[in-house]
Image (cartoon, rainbow, N blue to C red; front, side, top):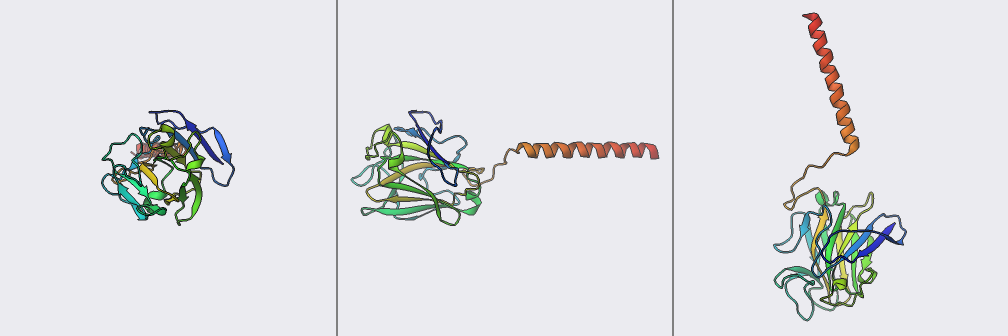
Amino acid sequence: MIIFSTRRLGAAAAFASTLALASTASAATVTSVFGAPDPGPGVNQTFIIDFNSGLPSGVTLTGQAAIVTGTTGTHAIPAGEASNDPYLVVPDSGPSGTAILTFDSALNSDIKSFSLYWGSIDTYNTLYLLDGLGNSFFSFNGASIPFSPADGNQFNGNTNQRVNFVLGPGETLGGLKFVSNGIAFEVDNIALEAPINDNGGGIPGVPEPATWAMMLVGMFGLGAILRSARRSNAIVA
């Protein structure tokens, strides 16, 4: 089931889901928060792609895209950001374009959710979620965001939103495809929930309850073996 909701929260980064849009084989959940400025990543989304100094390890960008700053006649900085803050724009030139942000296998197998700050939302902006083979398993366009007229307004909070996606069981996010049939598609500060840090290093996970139970059983068993060995040694002595 795909679920969507919008929260009218100017500075909070809480995400809630209440309104069912469609029923599919997936269990992705989509939510959004009003921006201007960006309310920031969701819970545990600590792997940040901010375009400030290139792309982090494990992430590649291809297609008709550019990393830019400021506002021109073809693209506008997402509302509330500094004029010198880099962001992604599609297309890099011309009236339309497509770009793909790809996550390598070491990264995509662990992504649980992600969010992005979607600037000056337009009806002709479409985001595709790609699996590990590059196939689209979900698409979402600017016209689907409730309370947003998707008219490309560069300043309002309802046309500049933090949009959050939670993957369903078994779904792998191999990349994001940005398609714009007009000028332009602007995004910044893509945030992934994955058990890695900003340098691509591993972060030890917190064991699941079942794992804790197995560990406890193992420790009790080891204790029993040690006690038995002590008793045997005492009898022999």
